[in-house]
Every structure is written in C-alpha cells, then in structure tokens.
Figure 1 (cartoon, rainbow, N blue to C red):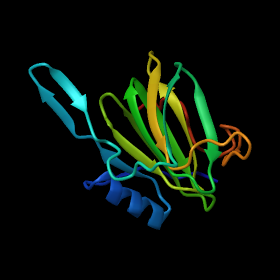
Figure 2 (figure 1 turned 135 degrees about the vertical axis):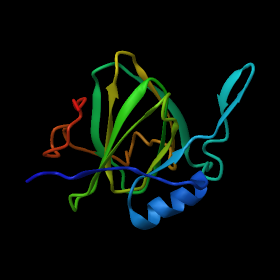
Figure 3 (figure 1 turned 180 degrees about the vertical axis):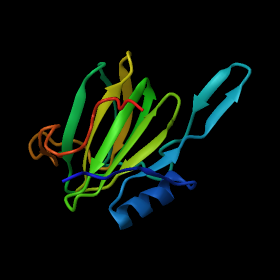
Figure 4 (figure 1 turned 45 degrees about the vertical axis):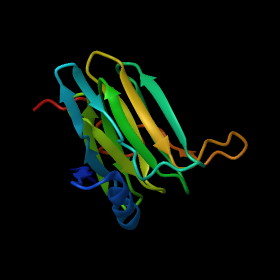
Length: 165
C-alpha cells in the first residue's frame, strides 16, 4: 500500500477561523504568519489571537537535528504549532489513511492547527536545532494525560527524512 501524503492546506484567514475549519473538517490547517518588519528588525506578533484559553497552556521546546518526535494524538486537545527557530517537517495522519506534511520554520513561518484525534509529529530538518512554540487548548495533566502514542515508523509510507528531488 502506498501512502498518499498531501501538503497541509493554507488558510488566508485568522487563526481563530482556521481553528473552526480544522475542527469541523478534522484536518490540519496552516495559517501563514504575518511578519512585521521595519528598519530595526522583524517580529511575529499576535499569532494565537482568538484561540488562547485560560485552561490551555503555552509551551516552547527545542528539538535537536535528526530527532523525530512522532506519533501522538489527543482525544480533546487541539495543538497550535509554530516553529520559530530552524525548520521542522510536520506530519499529520488520520486513521482513515489520510496524511499531510508541511515544512515550517524561519523561512515558512505560520501556525499549524492540529485538531483532536489526528496523529501528529515532527522531525527536525537541516543542520540546526528547531524551536517549537506551541499552544494547547488543555493544560497537561500528569495524572490523566490526554495522549496516545505510537512509534514514528508505524505509519507505513510516511517519510520523515529529507526527500531528494
């Protein structure tokens, strides 16, 4: 069986509207970042506007080159991922066989929205560490984690490596 992996679709709307779309369609959505620039430098601001909730949690993690963190999913939590340092190959898989992939990071900044029940993970691509800023709609509870895991190579045909073209 050959897995058909689609690119995560982009949305030219607010993160809040894309969140509603991702939830309704049970598919990941990528919202390109609005980059603010002037003669002093550049900024990414208000990227999670409209989706931050008091029961949620904002986190930052660094992933070393060559690392694959996959696969996991949540029953009730939505993830909002933004790679702000380096680059990550982000993968999403649904139990019916649908799969998506997107490379996001410094040169393709934006927010990837992953609604509940979708398997997801990331691999660092390139020679430097990758930094992931992410908001989750439900704070982590060590007593009852909303998380299920499977090995990174469990989805047959999903290539976490760099594809030579």
